[in-house]
Length: 201
Image 1: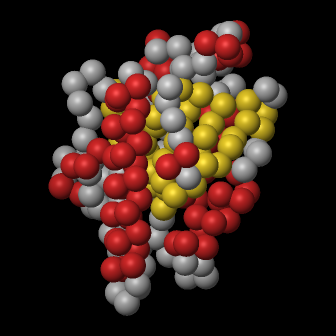
Image 2: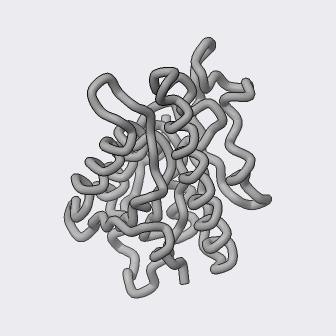
């Protein structure tokens, strides 16, 4: 059983520590998540998103901000099955020594993981979040983070997903940027910003 999660409300927000949280940027995260005709567009959008996240990762490193990566553990036969090439993190955002990798099995990056503990160890009060997939792990983690007292900056062009039968990936991304902008719980809230406008200093 995981230890109780303590929210960061008691910290002095004048001494805010901002961290970058990259969710499920794994080799096969969007494999088969579009029709054959659309898959190349989904893959291209993912490559562009990963490039922006890698740039933010470098910004965070240069500023001395914590970098935390989340990796989804799929079951046997899943496209993210543990130990398979599809499960591995994309090379562009691979962790450096000392950077945290949190492994999860649900859409909520905090659920039955040590993510909150790792963030609290680093006195993090503000999360910059990007990754995959927008309507599942990104959305769920953003909402849970705010409910735990973390301010969140969702990277507007730093999360993506695949198509669904009724919506394209770009429509899903736009919907979540609009829906989550200003989402709050208590003193914590979500802001939406493009990668180019985000700083860690």
